[in-house]
Image (cartoon, rainbow, N blue to C red; front, side):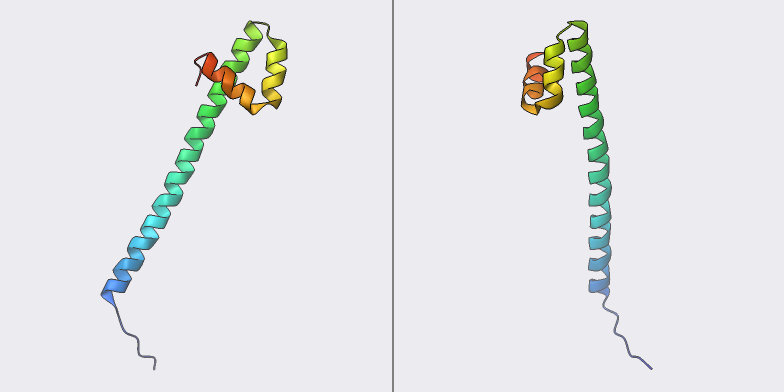
Length: 79
């Protein structure tokens, strides 16, 4: 026969830690989804603007240069 000791405080602490970890993971996942969607929306808006303005060289450059993309997003008020 195995004798075990029940520690209520340890049990509750473990439950809280597990819930906190689960909440963190869920929050991170949702935040990632929202951030990804926002990034896609901004990229689409920038691409649409550049195509409409026939700024093809800028369109090509933003596909390769993230800093230039950020600059144009800010400059055009898209972000």
